[in-house]
Image 1 (tube, one colour):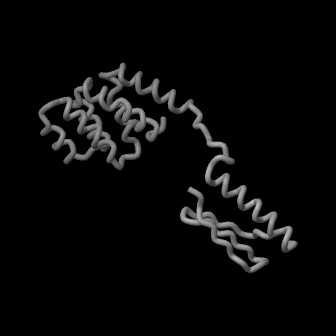
Image 2 (cartoon, one colour):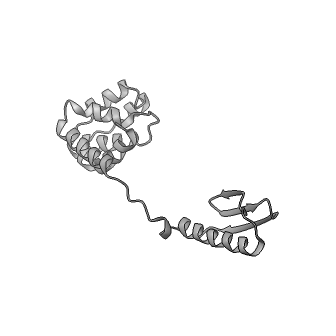
Image 3 (cartoon, one colour):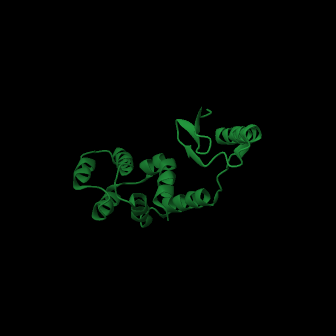
Length: 161
């Protein structure tokens, strides 16, 4: 079970959990697992309304440095709120089995740039007779640098946006 995927699921279920969960036992379990600090524990128990306390708890968990924050939250909900955990598991299953759509390379800015560079290389090879014009390529976020060590020239091309 991946903490990042669970985090996404808990974001979508934020309001459902805030409205339907009494956070007291969940808070106790998360303190025991060192997911939330003693200071956060005291802060949460000073919030009188359980729904507000639960909403604040969920917000605090997004800033927790614990590597298994949302795994521990799922486990803390399991005994008292099996319906919510079932919904979490269902959304998690849907999220992890879905394959992300990859953009077609020719339609992306990188694809357009690679086509341009391919044409540029062919043009240089025709006019200069170099068979291996590009010996090093360095791609950065601000620009693309094509360094040709054989011809001792450098071409700097801004990235397409």
